[in-house]
Image 1 (cartoon, chains in turn cyan, orange):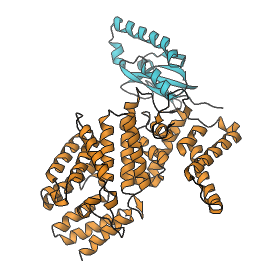
Image 2 (cartoon, chains in turn purple, brown; image 1 turned 60 degrees about the horizontal axis):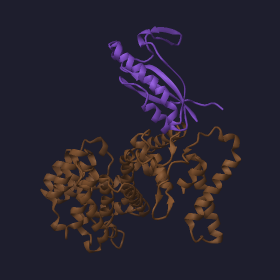
Image 3 (cartoon, one colour; image 1 turned 90 degrees about the vertical axis):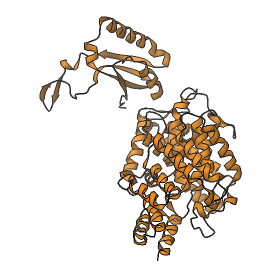
Image 4 (spheres, rainbow over the protein chains, first blue to last red; image 1 turned 30 degrees about the vertical axis):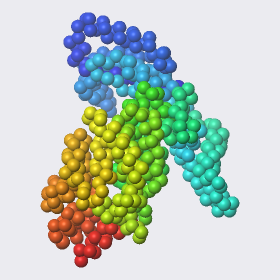
Length: 113
Length: 391
């Protein structure tokens, strides 16, 4: 098994203008996602939703600046960590991650023996 | 061999080393004891044995080696002809995984499935060797680290892989059909390997029109294999080839496949290229060639699948359909195409049109430039003879 980080990149503006109904749907989608991971033969190890990039602070070379490290149209808004036997399984799980305003990136986690 | 060895090592680099060592051992062994009855089987067994040894002796290091994942439960695709799961299909499917970009997919397949050297793969792509080496290394690393599984995808995912696999098989064929370097015009091993792969895909996906189109294209093109060089190894043009020696059964099979492949809407690029090859194959002589039909087919192909090489071929066809001056005008539109810089067929085609127009000085320059750009001995001899004939 290998750990994969699934990074969720979405358009924050869409969230800012979403109705409470849409929010509710998205929450329900995430609950459904979490419940369904095991049927792919993978395990959900963790994950969090992040506050928007407007709340981000970056530090580079000791210098502190307001804002995210990299400005992108679709910003990192949350992540899951899964354990999967191979990339195909990780991709199958990633397809089920709710990301209606963008998409996800799958990155293998480095292992140190 | 490599495909079978990878199943043991689950690591591409280790498998490649084992295969190379097996070849080296064979040279020594066979020099003293003679060549075994089934050299291929001998080599595969030797490579597998080495792989098992490597695994036994590397208990500790192995943990540092990212492994290919082998899926033991997936239903193996059985190759009808041999009755065993075809490891090469497994290797091709892995090399063509959607998590790898197209250039990486093609490069890996040529390198690992077909055993081309990195410089040969680089030439097939018109990129520098260093670029190609980096591309292959990066792709292998991703397969290992991200754990791209070593298996034929389940039936539901297979069609999604087909496009990549077809592009790969086609490039493999074109590389073999006119070898980038060396004494031989054709690398039969590569051509045969690509036809085998195309037949295998056809068995797996009997209703896929693109697969039918590709197999047709390979059969129709390769049907001319016996007539492409003369007794003396000289390159013979389509115009000079003895059509009675073309492989009729292959042509018949190819034409039937083209008909099927052209029913798809829109037709695949392979079906269109096969249709062009079929026009030549069914023409009783060079003088009877329906060039207008060929130019029209290239026109459709250019719209569906724009590529400088297709545009180059269209320009050559225009030169026969509407005269050398029209062909040269079409060709000169491509002069600034960066992808064709360093592509020997561009000056070679220009040279021929200039020769036909009697512009001897310019033709001579173009032949000289084309000579600088090919390392294939048969092609060089042909261009050299044309250059000398200009006086």
